[in-house]
Amino acid sequence: MAVEKAWTDRRIENTVGNLLRAGVSISAAVVLCGGIIYLVRHGLAPADYRIFHGEPSDLRSIRGIVWGAVHRRGRALIQLGLLLLIATPVARVAFSIVGFAEERDRMYVAFTVFVLAILVFSLVGSS
Image 1: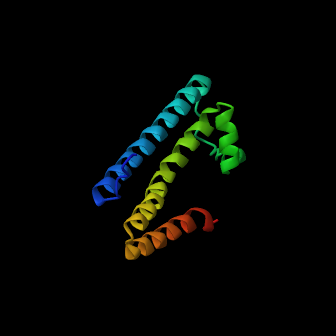
Image 2 (image 1 turned 45 degrees about the vertical axis):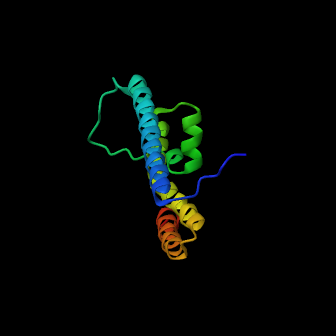
Image 3 (image 1 turned 90 degrees about the vertical axis):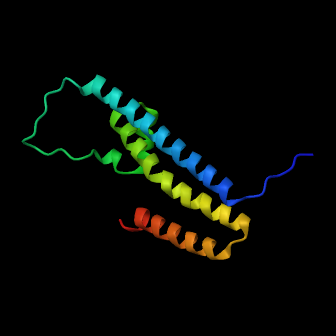
């Protein structure tokens, strides 16, 4: 029979640290791949700074970004990497809620839920 480890502050800190390292590393790798693909396909195109060209409409939604990333489009992969980078601290806060709940620390659970609500509202409720 396996002995289950209790959630301690030290274990939560280590898990959160690993989560943050993994999230940043994965997002950096995705941005790097997207940058390489973009430069291979468009690196020799002359730059035209007289006219501002914004992001294409398909890169303004998560669905469009994921579709473009699946089809190995450089800009979409860069955008996906940035979304992963933004999602990393949100995942950290969500994991902290679970950790504090396992420790039965109601006050920290309440504060962390409030912080997560603010993060989620700032990401999806502002548009």
